[in-house]
Image (cartoon, rainbow, N blue to C red; front, side, top):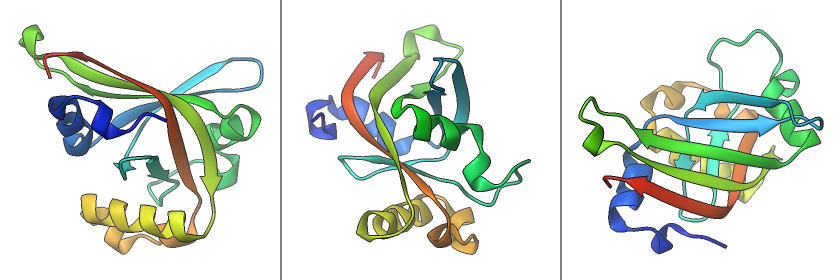
Length: 144
C-alpha cells in the first residue's frame, strides 16, 4: 500500500500544505462526478468529512456518498497552480473509498481535520459520516 514516505519530500509537503483537493467518484454506470473537498491525511488514509457547509440534500443522499456506495474506486487530485507554469505540480491518488460513521479511525480523522481547518472546531463533524480513502497508487508530477 502506498504511503507518503514513498513520495518525494516535496510531494509530501504539497499533500500536507494543500487546503483543497478534488475528489472524483463514479456511479455504477461509470458516470463521473468531481467536487472540491477539504481533507486530511494521516500518512496512510485520506479523510474528508460530510460537513455542515450548506448542501442541497441530506448527507447520505449526496452524489459522492451514493457513488462511493455503488463504486468504491475513486481518485483524488491535490494540485498547485501558478501563473508561472514551471511551478505547476500535482499528486494523483487512486484508491478505494469507504464511509466511516464511528470508531477509532473516525475519531482520528475528526482530530486531524479540526487541527487543519479551524472552521471544523465549531461543526459537529464527529456526528457525521466521514469519507476514508485508502490509496492504491500515488503519482506525483511537476515542480515539487
